[in-house]
Image 1: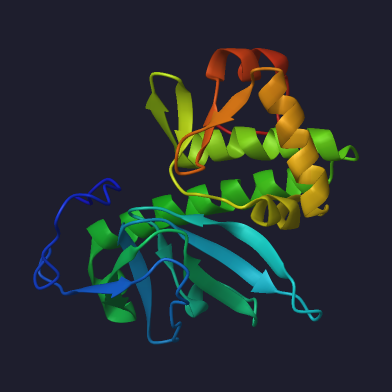
Image 2: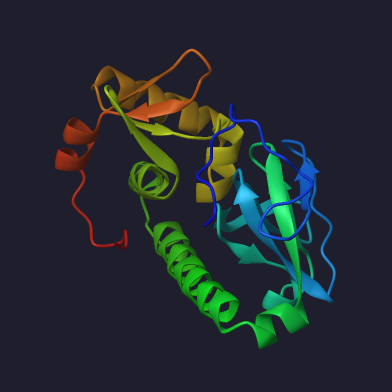
Length: 213
């Protein structure tokens, strides 16, 4: 069974379920080749596309259990980097073909990734920037959140520029809107600048069918 993300727990890189784990630091790009796929063992990665103008277009996030690789996408400028330190396990394509259990796991994770990407597309289609940011925070709460006493803490630290690039606006606009949300008691920040969403207040305000279950 794959481990939940816990950056403080020691991990043996030599042998995990019969295979060696590969480590990539936060912010480091993960190499992609066609002969196999990566599976996240611990940590969270960002999946994105590089536009012709050099801008990152967010495609989603890979969490523990998620498979990704160049053979699973038709996008030539597909890229992956860690939002946290990453421990990845490599599978050759024969592994997926010969193992029914691994194939079923890959199918389930790819289906979830497809729903995640559809949610991001739906968010991008909203006209008002405020609505896009609210919906993105709700998706982050669902996908990358962990429950704490104060609400739901987003497990990775996202900059205002990260959020702005995802919803197609400026960093200044995101900073202003986050300030407004904070004043209304919808969210706060911990000492490491992770977003904490005050679940009851935020979710009671937000009414939409964009976010999937």
